[in-house]
Length: 312
Image (cartoon, rainbow, N blue to C red; front, side, top):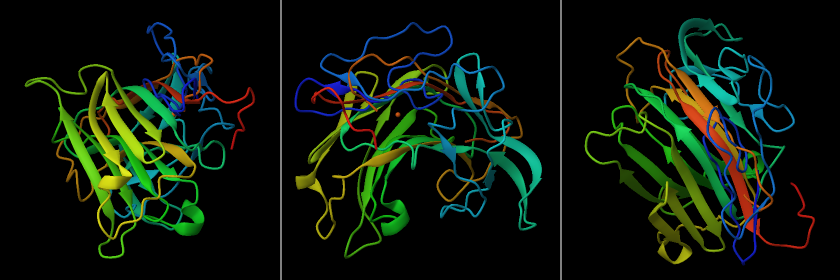
């Protein structure tokens, strides 16, 4: 989804990430109004039949199990067993199961990684999603974006914006980050975290994860808390600021890897993403068997522009 702002800002908003929608609502949640000053430009209501797959005009998949540069354990599929619509939500399920890839390699886990690459990308805006995260050691859910020149420039030259990342061993901590190229290190990075009060976990309830991205600045939010603001002036020396071109959205639940570590439990859960319907203001939008990951409505918003906003 996308919303267009009535001031010179662009925003993309994701709520309850069940899909990528600009202001969409899932389950029993009430339909929300877009943030003041924004217009919707893209949305997904996840209103298909139970058991159906996400709208192919809005979502496609990464397929494979090569570790994804992080020594992850899952094989990403496009099966409904791993990503489906259920009661107005997008459900991503990481499963513990024997699975053989097309090259004959055996895996112990499957999951899904959805993306809008080639279907929707946007420069600037508010991207927001209401998400209920899964719980469990070794799980790694994420709501993030890559530059749409990923295919030609590669990573990290394309740029990466991590709106929500959580690892199972830190159930009350969310990570928000920017990653880009550097001439003196593997990457240039800015990152921050926000923690819930003691005893509370992100898997307990839905929270709204968002970025407000405009020229030279990216602000990170959980619910109404602006916990980090990164600017081009803060970017590390010898790094290149590449956050000035269209990015596409990714939703996934990874299993294991160099950061979250091993999975030590065998209880499988489901990742549910719910979206809300977008209003007319621009905004834009992994797991081991036994964990629930809920994403609710997503939306994207952009600064107000003459009526027709080109969709990339």
